Image (tube, rainbow, N blue to C red):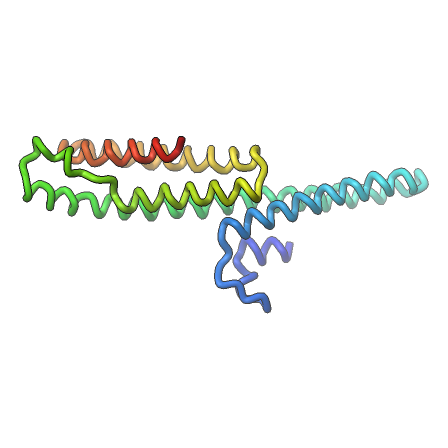
Length: 193
């Protein structure tokens, strides 16, 4: 429980270790460490089961409780990683929403709306968001197995999709926003492949 508080509650930043921050890579490494310990617990229980007298086998149930607790901590770590990425998505999409009106106002004052699609570029906040997600995926390929990566990135994709679906109805009312949204969605989809 103390480890859980140190990692998930960011208490490790206040210990003698003096971490400046706890990022997703730290969490992924902690996840793998807990998976390793869980595997060891299973092995130790199996070995003890073979060597202990039958009347002492009931003592081995404590290993199951500890293993269950570690598995719970692993799930909390994955959820914390997803939460961190969701915060990044929220922040970048808010910046995108705030920025795109200004960007369009500048473009509209410079030219008429018939040539607008040729001058629109992918928003810097969207580029930054996708770069962060791609970097996260690359670092997780080293630290996590495929099932864990799929679990995390399915949640990220679901979050990103729902947030974009929420934004679209609000912004497509203004027809001059459609090309900007279209270009940024194409960029997101390209980077997600």
